[in-house]
Image 1: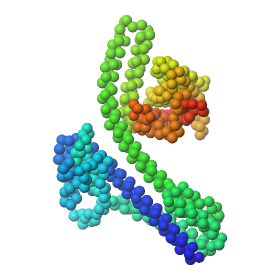
Image 2 (image 1 turned 45 degrees about the vertical axis):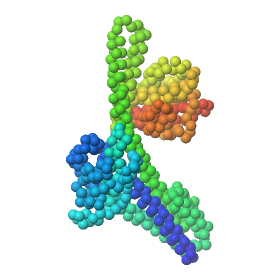
Image 3 (image 1 turned 120 degrees about the horizontal axis):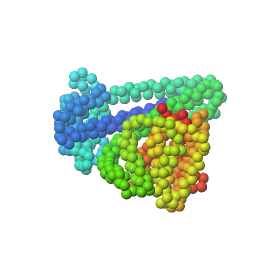
Image 4 (image 1 turned 30 degrees about the horizontal axis):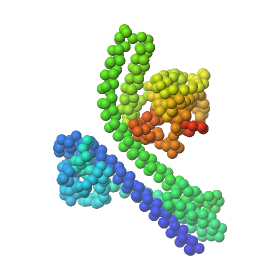
Amino acid sequence: MLYVIVLLCVLAALILFIIEKREIKAIFEEQENMGILTAKYIANLNSQPLIQWDEEGVEESIEEEIDEKLIYIAIYDKFRMPFAASRFIRDYEEIYSFSQLGRDVNENSVFSQRKRIVDKDTEQILRILEIEIPIFVKGSQDRWGSIKIGLSLEETRKEIQQTRLILILIGGGGLLIGVLGAIFLAKRITGPLTKLVEATVRISKGHFSQRITITGQDEIGNLARSFNKMSRQLLLTRKKMEAANKKLIQAEKLASIGRISAGIAHEIRNPLTSVKLNIQKLTQSDNLDEMEREHLSLSQEGIKHMEKSIKDLLDFTRASELNPALFSVSQILDESIKTLADSLELKKVALERDYQDGLPQVSVDGDKLRQVFLNVLRNAYEAVEEGGKINISLSLLKERSRKMIKVDISDDGCGIPERERELIFELFYTTKPAGIGLGLAIARKIIEQHRGFIRVKENETKGTSFEILIPVEGVR
């Protein structure tokens, strides 16, 4: 009996120790990632003053960033000598006087360490996470210098203490139930206890989705439920951390889009304006027949769409608002098809439509929805071979007690591998040599703004099918 109790105590302590170490490691990794992003943000914020060697301007800027979480900031030149720093750190020459980064670094180089320093004003001990990263000026391969920041670990320490307390309470409760069960029902629980031990070992290895299949209403059953509750809480915590990491990655992607957008706007808008003006002059000519005027009109519509696409790209990193109005989805689809009609005819692609009669109008942003349809249709056009086939169907269905307009756009092209079907909606993911991976990401964002869904599935025979669901109640 005593052996069983000791074994339970050891196992519980081991589980709590392993989980605590992993949680603490994850907390510090998250703090370090946030510190790297903060350092990059401050470096980008001061990129222009750094290029101009405006020491006073840099110091004023970084002093404004100092708060209770960000203790100090120091910036070094390429010779690893101090260039500018916040007032606090100047009194600590052992930290301020030199850079921790080596000479041979790249954009991904990071130096970090945890340290304690004594505040010379209050004589309090400050726990600091020091992070230093190199600074590279845009357009140059040479390092300008580096930036060092000191982040307070006080909130992190409190979070670790809270995590420890929660783990101790959960582990203590589970252990108490196990000990009581072992004392009063040792023979009866030998079999279930074996299952319990095996499950806890798997949980200690990080398999938080593990569940203990013991349904009894006695003490061992309560213990099993307590462990299941603990594993659910740990699984939820891990999912929250993964979601936070995804948000950080998404933030970096959006920052990259912002830089790309400025370049695209400059490179495309100027020549596009020239083309637009020339077409406008051509339309004023009296020597054009009706067919030529129609083609010029289509060109003007195409230019308007390109200008709108540039604006959408520039607005992608910001929260854009919809301009809803009542539209027929079939009308928007037909307008999108008309834009690609010449390309489809040139490639001899057969296009079949199957629209359900009597579909209601919906409140949507017509321009944005047209952008979605054009993107999916263009992908289908590029996927099929010459003489291929594209099918478009439009119908009304109920999904989760909601009426939805269902749009199916399928082709008999090369198809999409199953492992890539979720990735194609991610930012910057593309299989096209000339693509940058924005089209379907923008499409999904627009459909989600309409409270709808877009998904991809494989056709039964060949090719790919995109399913777009738009709520009948629309948006306001």
